[in-house]
Structures are given as structure tokens and as C-alpha cells.
Amino acid sequence: MSAQETKVEAGDFVVLAEEEDSIVPAGTYRVSKVNPDGSFHVGGKTAVWPRRIRTER
Image (cartoon, rainbow, N blue to C red; front, top):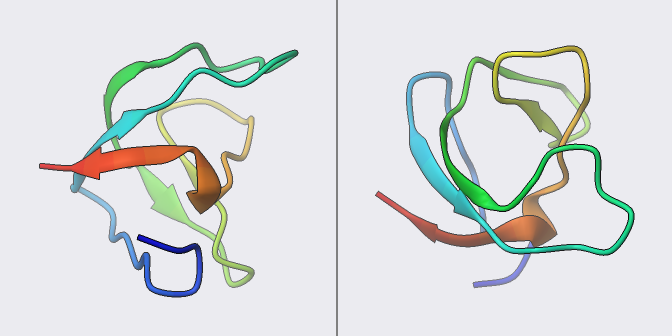
């Protein structure tokens, strides 16, 4: 699944992969907001990039 193919919507569940120096740790989250640039939020102010998505549930 590439970043271009990954389209998440608010309310989706995603499993994030570990990434060095990441503020948001790996784990399962519910998407709270999607930004116009494709990044998204999982409840906080920090944006997460789709490349971190390991799987969608």
C-alpha cells in the first residue's frame, strides 16, 4: 500500500508502524481529522503521514 493509494477518513482505524523520532508511537488509532495534504491526526495536534500506516481496519 503506497502513500498515494492510502486514503483515510475521519473515523477509520489505522495501525501505525514504528518510525524513528516519531511523536506518535506505533499502535492502533482512530483517525480524528484528515488534512488537505493527505496527512491525518489521531486525536492530537501532531499530523501523521500515510507512509506510517501498516494496515487499515
